[in-house]
Amino acid sequence: MNYRHAYHAGNFADVMKHGLLALVIEHLKKKDKPFFLLDTHAGTGMTDLSGEEAQKTGEYRQGIARILAAENPHPALAPCLAAIRALGGDPLTRYPGSPALMAHLARADDRLAFCELHPEDAAALRANFHRDARVKCHEMDGYTALKAMLPPKERRGAVLIDPPFEDRAEFAALARALAEAHRRFATGTFLLWYPVKDPSVSGAFLESLAADGPPKTLALELHVMAADPARMTGCGLVVVNPSFALTEKGADGKSTALSLLDWLAITLSQGPGARAREEWLRA
Image (cartoon, rainbow, N blue to C red; front, side):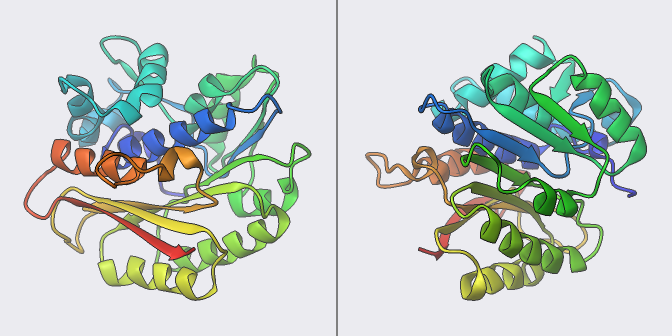
């Protein structure tokens, strides 16, 4: 309950997460049939970059600000950057969180649900989307939402699970939640974000998914410097049932996702050890 995303809005982790999320949503739109989007730990949906929280850390300066200043952004970032510019202004004054990006990219007949447990953030979330009939905002625990809202009536869609990771037990909770959610919605695309501080901790989480997780599980990681247990130097996204938009191979033999993360590792590097990684945990 102490985690507030405004301190970290637009940082390298957001750029990675939102870039890949946008590709997944764009792929869903290739079919006319409506889909369902669920964000289990939604935050407020929008952050004022001139606000006290964002200015205190300034993390967006090492993230989205660098991307917008790049001469030739990676082409896979196009849908994400178009949404960010449309929602946040040019020059950027606000950073759209996952809910805002989802709502912007979704179509008129798609359905969205956003969940946030922090009372103040939940109130702000409702205020930001109260005019959007496609969106339902819930002040509730995100893990509870997975049980209450899956499977969706549309039988297609994506679920973003981005918990606060305030203690190590979060990894175990995330693995349990994924197992239950996948049983309910085996054909859905699940995106699970996680931080990398101590690689042995996040590594143990990935090993557990490799042993007991769902089939078709892909792990993607972005590191902006060498590991330092005192700070978050990298992050990852576990994707269950990744869409072709992420896995399509280019002329260099790399998947779209890995090609994008390689570019981000160079562009967002904060020191030696910046790199990207892709691993199929279960094929």
